[in-house]
Length: 157
Image (tube, rainbow, N blue to C red; front, side, top):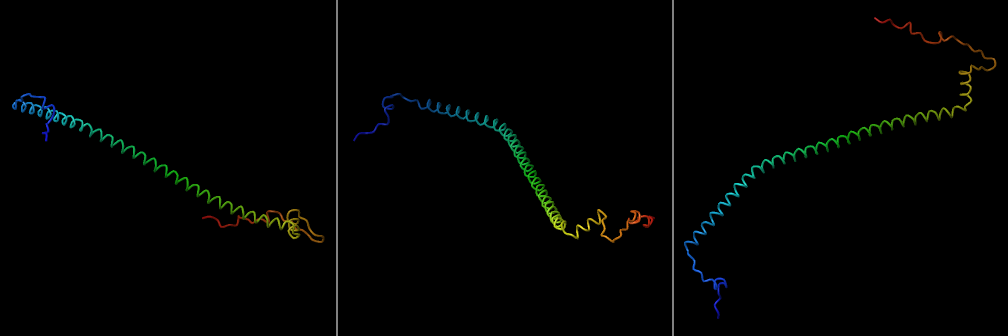
């Protein structure tokens, strides 16, 4: 069996590596990476404080907007409820008015039925036209005598 080779690069590269130089390069590389990470952390921390303020401001704005929307919805609902209540009251008033008109209609139909009645015709002729039957006498009194007097009422103290 054949041995496996590590890589063609390793096979072709016959360069001698100085171990101290390699360690120094690795340490330098680690230091630069560490500096970069520290710089990133500082930048992130600096941005984060600004970010916190921006987040607070955006939260406050969001709360304000939500509060305004809630107030608008409450105002809209209360306006609708007040409108519904006023319409219900108006409906109730209209039902009462309808009942009054129906009662008045019933009275007028009864009066219309009695209009052709002979007794009603005779009564209207006597009251309004002052007609009398043959042989009857009519007595007419002045209005001063027929109207009740308020002069004899109790005097105020």
